[in-house]
Amino acid sequence: MKRLKHFLKYKYILLVIIMITIFSKINISNIKDELQTNLYQGLKPVKVTEEKIKINEKKLLVNAKMPEIHYSNEEVERYINSYIRRNINDSINHQRQESQLNKNNTKTNININYHIVFENKSLLNIVIYKEIRYEDNKFKQEKDSYVFDLNTGQRIFLNNLLKDNEDYEDIIYDYIIDYIKDNKLKFNRNKIKIDKYTSYEIIDEGINIYFNPYKSSEEDLTYEFKIPFNIFKNKIKMIQTSNIIANIDTQTLTKNNKYINSIINIPIIMTDNKDISKHINDEITNSIMKFFNESQKQAEEYNNALPEIENKFVANVDFDVKKNSDNILSILIKYYKYAGGAHGYYENTAYNIDTTNGKILTLDNLFKEGIDYKKVINEEIRMQIEELIKSDEQNKGVYEFKSIEDKQKFYIQDDNIVVYFDLYDIAPYAAGIPEFIINVNKIDHMLKPEYKEIFK
Image 1 (cartoon, rainbow, N blue to C red):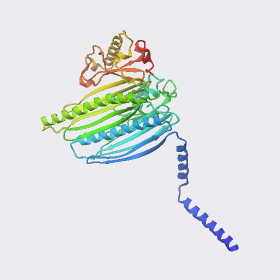
Image 2: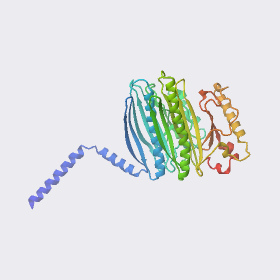
Image 3: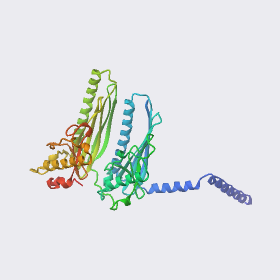
């Protein structure tokens, strides 16, 4: 019995020595951090997994991590994942197209990663980092920051975040310019433009504003600026957005042969009503495929007529979702075509859809019968053109606007109707696609009652 007690005693002593040896080789603080991280992850409303993507082609090497969000609201989860996935895939496809069209044989390396920079019960801010390196030691670094409302799935743009500060554009711009002056920096000020689409990420007590590429081998400076919330007159409040009414996936077609190089992104729209979804998808898909098929035919004819021309015919289609709430889906299909020469041709087609019945709205559908809505919108556009001329004398004589048309192109966004014109309609090519924002306050009295509520 004594021998057994002695054996057990030495056994325990040996076990203690082994445990001390093991823990002496482990960083205790790392264990603590890992335990805290795991506990924190367990308390988070969002979980993130990833898919690793590797593409190794003759002139392109891609290493990417595709994040996948897991959330209790499956509709919100799907919308956010589709949104992020489309943008990452689109970035890869366009870089691939650029490398394929490039006539030299240098290889481009792309690394894509992500980071959750902010998260609470209501908001998720995920940043996608992209580093593009070329064989001549040149590089550029870009990032795409997405802030989502976890209650609805809607993306929070800068104007949504700062909605109670109408002068946020001027406040931020002046703050950045003062910072540049105070630190005697030589930034390219033309790059610093503040509007709804200005990129930002949430940081402690403020936001980080940046302009892509935020860093490159061409400059020593980094184009990002920390903006504290306390510079704004009004306190930043809890954001409230409307629920999404449609989930949107993307079908991508690519083609690269001796005639054409093409990237076609087709939106796949899913609403609660399958018949309405089918009607919308058929309408949009047929239009896009008509463009794609006609482009292939034109590319072959172009190549056969001018065999000495080495440039490939380029035809791309992409889309932007402008509004996805309050029974209205406003989606902008963007067509681009290039067949050599100084520049390509692009055209936008908007679909403003009443998702209660599947009707594609024209501008006149929004207004009461007998109302001269054209007069009010025409006056607003003329006033905005005058403001453009005041802000820049070079705009004088650029615009030749008379009136909007009966079936004027437009899309709906926030509490605005955005009227736009094709290339050359009212201005030369250099002016791009002119857009004029018509705030609902200008036209509210003219709207049909059923369409007043869509402008929120």
